[in-house]
Image: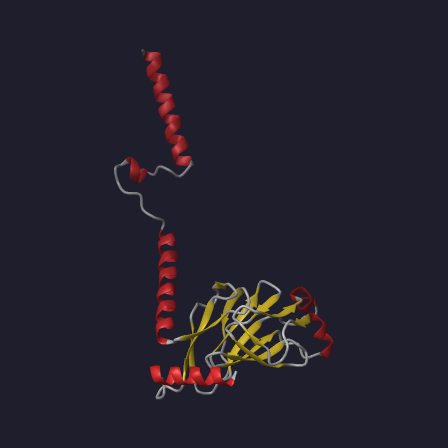
Length: 225
């Protein structure tokens, strides 16, 4: 009996040690207390929930949205008070951020003017290269005045080639429409996917905004396409 007792004691001790190593037991649980979630996990979940609430509020206040044209890291951007966003790309393809029309392709091929179906005029650009020799790193996949759906491939570009040349490959989207207000729907540093809403827009000035104004602007934009 004494040998059996010591064997049972050794087995129990080994089981407890294994439980501690695997993170399944804590001192609190042995004492009958409730195991608490690590504080950093609570803070991280609180931040995530705050961002989700911010996105929901933004979508309620701004009825139209511009999606990220590329997957990557979102960065806020200020451009003379114009609504806009900048994304550090994680891929070499640029997609239409909304349904609309490619109204202009700039000579180097790295920038577009894009009129959305709801009337906002967007300036979309990849990088900051000005040298015409850099044109070889950009391959537009649409033509001027082409009407496209959301998610249509607009451009392929050589990210690594641009970086080796010392040029930026940052993707920027700026709203050029004068009578338009907007808000970023995500936080700087967030990872966003192509096609995910990043910019909420309301057409018209603060005094003009409203359901009637939004509907009228939308119908005008559709008629002009």
